[in-house]
Amino acid sequence: MAEKLPPEVQAQLAKFQQLKDQLDRLLLEKSTIENELREINKVLEELSVLNADATIYKIVGNLLVKSDKTSVEKELNDRKELLELRSRTYQKQESILRKQLEDLQAKINDMLSKYYPQGGQTGIKA
Amino acid sequence: MSQGQGGITLDELIAQADYLKRYIDSLQRTQLELLESINSIDSAKQAIETMKSGNKEMLVFIDRKGYLLAKVGGIIGDKVTVHLGLSYYAEVDLDSAIKILDKRKDEISKAAQDLNNELQKAASTYNQIVDILNQIQQAAARRQQGE
Image (cartoon, rainbow over all chains, first blue to last red; front, side, top):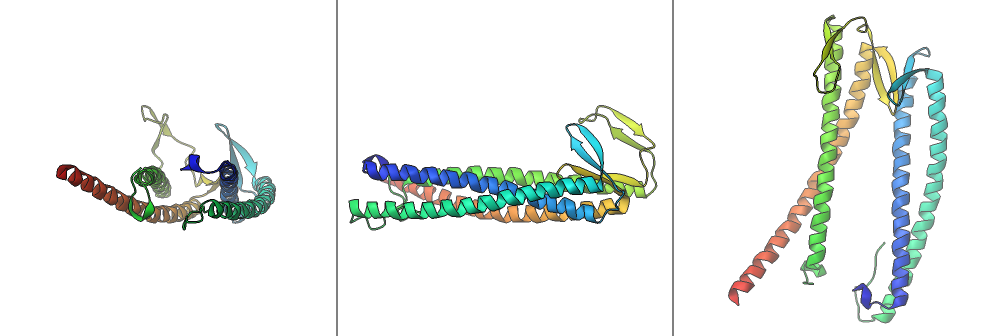
């Protein structure tokens, strides 16, 4: 069906697909960050009930390297701060992309209704 | 391109069935991994209970396939090193280790349950599509016989 569409509509559809792919990639990255944040919070929660002098190990390659509670908590809180910042940035980008997609969708539907006035249900959805 | 039910083409229906099949396969793989994790946690808890019972004579697998085992001594004490999440482990007493493992098991069981619900929904949709495809195939066969 796509080859029968006017070039103008095809160009907008390609742009729409590009934006959609961009949004999908962003959502995937955002979800990875949110998963890591959840894991960090769980580890911090477990650490909070341990004694201050508890022995902690961190996997580095095939090695378990000895550490301590304070250093690990600091390391995790730093990482958490960074991830929260990224997550907020991704949220902003997500709303911008969603708005762009919505606008483009309306534009394409307008174009389609001009080219195919009888098309009843012709149109795209984000 | 033949037209299916509800304005969907047959090609689209087949593509949807194919997508769902791959989705179901991926859910089943994840489900298997979650069940393996639950079994692994249960084994870890059993080992801790054995240590608590005072059994000090233990063997450890040296390789993954179990070709070689060795007696362990000295490392069995009143503490174990348990996974906290991400790449962190903590040396804790046996009861604390069991608590941490129980919490992890609950989380994984909950995830397995959610995944199972999703799997059932996907399987039900897939079966509906397969039914429609079978009906289309049977109708086509009947038409051919009638010609």
